[in-house]
Length: 82
Length: 146
Image 1 (cartoon, rainbow over the protein chains, first blue to last red):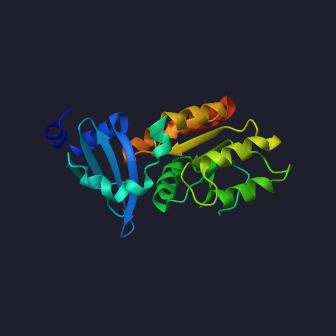
Image 2: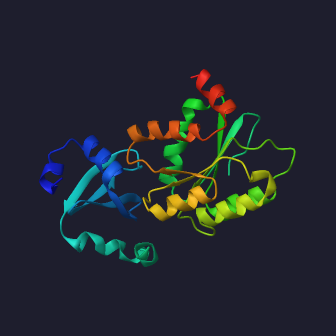
């Protein structure tokens, strides 16, 4: 799946794909809003939620590792070794 | 912490208020038979489990987030399994993690592993997965009535 193919999907399908195929990288909060980052094949997808985690507001996609920056402190190197 | 009643009850420990609310809303459908009791960190949950009296009925399920302050869900699971009365109570590790190591850990301590949903629609399936971990008797009772 390429980033462009992913972008063309309805949001519910994007979330199903991230749930079943995505690799969870990290979670952060910004102004009490949850934001989750996943890797899917060769790109990253960041899910931004509305007030609660029930409904996604939008999904930001990028091939750039810049999206990883706010999550770097959370990544457990020990988990990557195994 | 909310207080238990005479219903079947499920304990759920998670520090994320959004996840607590999501699970709380989903269990509302079963509110007639199941009461959800929540804890906002692993320490609060452990304190409750350590002082659990023999007169109180055991929960039909315990749901533990992995990444929690004070005591994380994995350490809490280990401590729970060391308490005789909780040794065979169904436990599910409920986490956004997809790490195989976490899944292996859950299996080692006779616990289930469920990945947190990304929206409400996925949560409907996950409630079914939670109920699948309860004893057959509890599953029949809950599903018969809904």
